[in-house]
Image (tube, rainbow, N blue to C red):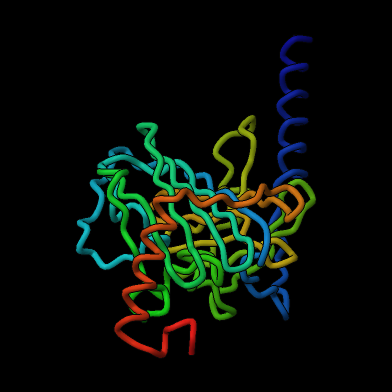
Length: 260
């Protein structure tokens, strides 16, 4: 009998602890924070976790997705596990890691993007970011894939471990937090507030993305300050391709010449 009472008491304590950690604030902020642009000097890592039962083949290279926005357009049939973006003014670097261990590295030098192809790292691909076709690839000016996070998609405030986040979603608001907890003893997370349909995003009070969810993939953001990043060093092969492109462009159009 005593053992049964102890089990009940422990179960009740766990329920209270979960309720304290995971809460949903039933107040819609009148002025939710706007999504901030990326830092002009700093870095952020996006870690991906998929709950999809099967891997989805990568889209074809003719899909038209920008280089930095969707490296999966040039990827083998593997899942992206993380992306790291480092920005230092006009110079920037991206590193995309895949589940099979492959990495794809890219750089932005002024307004030229150049990166490896996942299927052939020795073959470099160049994008002129000043063109409308590749303008969306410039991760120095926006967070890739979060252009939809606008005031009209703001839903409510949620709270996790006494930290407030602002929840945005396309579609219906999420269900009550209590019904979304999968197990009393599971460690709760922001995805427990998920509405289960459309794209979703959780912003910090400062306006930085903390987590997103789309098509069963949860992306978590971790930021590094300007003091924590190392100088970006561009390998010669990337520099050479950009220089050759710039030289060819200058010969065709005097407006691009450094002498003008």
